[in-house]
Amino acid sequence: MSQYPPNPQPYPPPYEGGGSAYPPASGGYPPSGYPPTGYPPNPDAYPSAPGYPSAPGGAPGYPPAPGGGYPPSSGGYPPASGGYPPSSGGYPPSSGGYGQPQPYPPGPQPGFQPQGYPQPQPGYGPPPMGYPPAGGVGAPISQQPTASGEGWMIAPQKPLSCPPGLEYLTTLDQLLVKQKVEILEALTGFETQNKYTVKNSLGQKVFYAVEDSSCCGRCFCGALHPFDMKILDNFKNEVIHMYRPLACQSCWFPCCLQKMEVHSPPGNLVGSVEQEWTILSPKFSIKNAAGDTVLYIEGPLCTYSVCGDVEFKVLALDESTVVGRISKQWSGLLREAFTDADFFGVTFPMDLDVKMKAVMLAACFLIDFMFFDKTNNREDDGFGMC
Image (cartoon, rainbow, N blue to C red; front, side, top):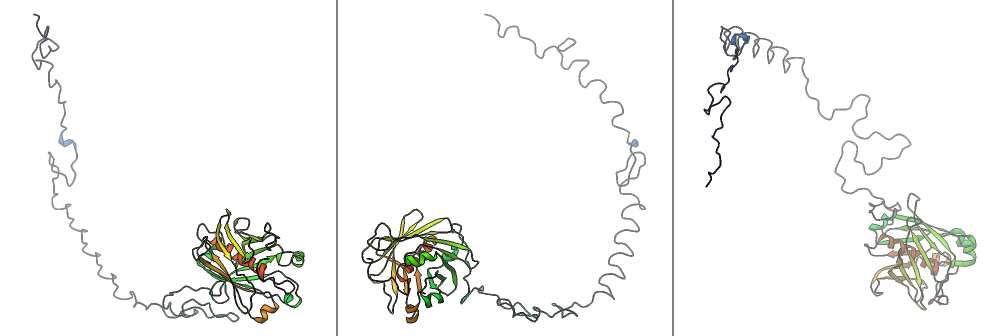
């Protein structure tokens, strides 16, 4: 049997120069010449400085001897003279210093107006309301000033998905439509272009409506004439455009009934109001831009307005739930007899889409032209649709 491990080597291995002793006798550790000559250096080679420990050779030690030491004998801290606080001319000054504090606010200065707003110049009216009185701010304003009476309605904040100009309708659930009296039309019977003022329930103006139609159409087609209706805001910007083509309204022509399209802004279709075929009571459908029916409008069997209002009910899709009304209001005997300047009230749900509210306004104009607009001082209202 052979030896294991084979040919073992001695450990540690032999070092250079022969032998197996560790460390070797010569050339071992530490090597010759270490440390080098001159290390550490002679302390006398470094200059002494104040504040350092004493060094061999008589250099000044620490702390330094009196005189030139620390703290200094003169010019130290605090200074003997001219120090802080100063003996004269210091702070606060003994004389010639700051005067007595002046009251706030200061009194009137020469050449300036007293406190408050300047006096109005000749030819100017009184200052606008809503500002604090002269001489002070006064109590905080708890309610912001708003338009009232015959003024224009203040535009509310516009929602992101609302067409420009329709933000007025976001906070409304009722509109009052008043037709302007045309003197020429009342005296001669010559049909002129209708004009309307649209107000909210507070009497503030919301829109101004102007009919755009041809003279020939009004004379030869009567209340069925085609027209465009421009709805303007208080800046005279057209925010809604309505178009009514030439069509019939009798039950004998079911394929050519009344329709009015609504665009807001102009060129962008948002919905339409279309007449439904019926024999007795008039009926309309309110549709969105996709052509889907959203609401129905159902009128009375008799549309004669004799000393009372004529109501058109706004119905939900189940055709039984009343959600609003379009009412032709009685405006007085003389006005009803000699003019076609009508009063209308339109109510709808507050949360109804503003685009559908604009279509409801268009339905009011369409109903006015179909049933209550005079031709040669003769209205087209009557009994039934035939």
